[in-house]
Amino acid sequence: MNKIIVITGASSGFGRLTANALARSGHTVYASMRETTGRNAAQAADVRKFAKENKVDLRPIELDVLSQESVDGAIASIIATHGTIDVVVHNAGHMVFGPAEAFTPEQLGELYDINVLSTQRVNRAVLPQLRKQRNGLLVWVSSSSSAGGTPPYLAPYFAAKAGMDAMAVIYARELTLWGIETSIVVPGAFTGGTNHFAHSGRPADDARVAEYEAGPYANYATKIMKAFSAIVPPDADAAAVGDAIVRIVDMPFGKRPFRVHIDPTQDGAEVAFTVIDRMRTDMLHRVRWSLDQRTSSASERRNYLRGARMCASSQRETKSTCAQSLSPSSTA
Image 1: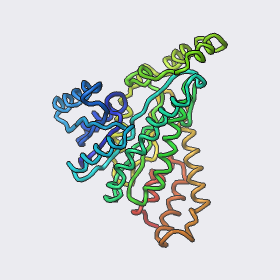
Image 2: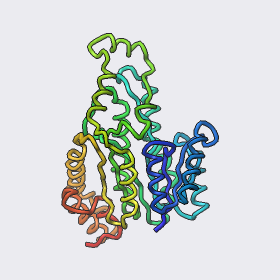
Image 3: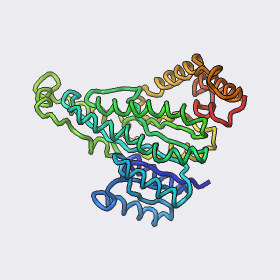
Image 4: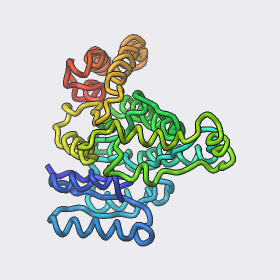
């Protein structure tokens, strides 16, 4: 079934690859980006060219995730055109690279804004419509760094992505009874196919960077980049992230996975998240959300407790996820 989909940060990288893949799968896809008539005019034109050449419904749309006004306008335009939005892919993000000490607090704030607060702006614009529909899907593009290997010189980025992942997890608990599903896609390191490393930001404090270069961490940035190149398999294809998102979107309601890992380096995140997510749901089961006093019906209590029991099992042991098993359609 054709779905109306909006993807943030779709001018390049995972976002653009995902937009192409979803459009090829038969969906109406809005590839959002900022400055579609400015610095991203060529990217917007390329989106239109791809749509025409491949006879797919892929449309660029102006959406600056750093502006609530811009986000509200884009989402309202899509709803006005189609009467609905079915899927939101939270993909917009930015990487920085360098010694953590050399970044100013303001730089960390800007990075948090792009990687975390941007999702809040989009959610506040789109969730009233999804809640009204009692149906929808949020796909969050996280990072294996949130639970896997964490090499030096990427601390601000890792911290921001961990914040985004935490938001996704809690949003899943708060949206499931509205019929809104959550899937978190966890890419590992890809040194090709995206602009993450090529366009990564640098520390503002050059003096601090110089001190690191003059000390025991001399040439460490170069060593880290060489190490990444060595551990990422030559056939690692960033398009695999988009393909995974297509599979998630095309799954029927109630069958979508809570997490999907696409990690060519196998940095341990899949193992760690299996344990972390299981323990989180076990905690929900133990505290029972004070359900016997606070939920409005016996039916809700049964659904929550059934969901908690299912989620306490490893993802490898059940196709259900926390979000689906706690959904209104669950039965005791």
